[in-house]
Image (cartoon, rainbow, N blue to C red; front, side, top):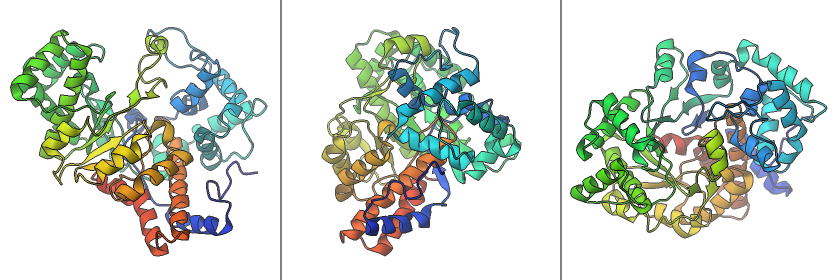
Length: 468
């Protein structure tokens, strides 16, 4: 039996289901744009086989291991690397068996949809994963991974990916991207400029990072002017490797637009570590405005990922480092927080600022009204916990009447789990088609318009927003 229902996520009402299906069939095989994510560019530079099922499907996927951890499974037993180099489970079959024994925990979650999609449509499996089928699953997937058709570049092409953006820090040498470039392979893998390590005073090793920043750019990053020039040079370097966007993972949406003198004074405080927590937040806010001004110069799209209390567990952060599944939604002020940036550059039609949030309460109250007024603003898609059927439905219902479809940026998968890319886009496309069908059947959208919007949501809006 198939693991995925052909009409999944469509209404049980026959008329709505028929309309949803028709819309979806028109975009099902549209090329995938993945303009924001965290896949490893070395996969495509080396084109080596993925080591084993556990390292492909369990270890890199925060959605998977955080659910298991929430039920008492240790990260060490799942093979999650430790920041201190300490021991973790090294046998991938044991990790896979542990995952399979607990697969029932994902019932009703988007992870179950994504994983079953991968099992069936990527690897050709048609029996449910369980403790009893764990070894059969492992052997089947491992055998597939040994075949050339399942190497990273071949899967990239089989998935129908037109463009995939990775995310690298400001200090990254982009060596993997250079190797992709030199290989002559036609797949389009581009980078994204993520400068958190040199704009966040609370990032570990901030002052040392800024010093290194100066060395690799040849700028005096002990001065405010030299520091800004270093960013300009690195942005240009990233553009040479295809970057069309920068990305900023700040805890708040605060922005500032300080005078040059005040900015210099604040910079010296954060550089010497004599700042308060509020001054650290102010500096991050100043840098969002500086990045927006630089975007007017070089054309990079500015992504702001706010509303996340990152690395919430100090125990996990200490043992395993940052970005290990413990980012938690927080209340976020966009109307007040963004005002200094918007007063400075918000009316610039040539600037694109994409807003993301983990605070769903602001969609209708703040984000949609802002994006529905300022020409520089667009809404990024539901993110982290909300790139799901229910999350996408709530997003559309909260934002469409205020800012329309064309002040949004389509969909991006934001994933570290490569095989989930087609699955995530499948869920997004089905969810959007289900929503569009409801508009058609209630007389709010014509059928011909719905087919156009479905294509735009699947492809056109992301291509335009990210300048791909």
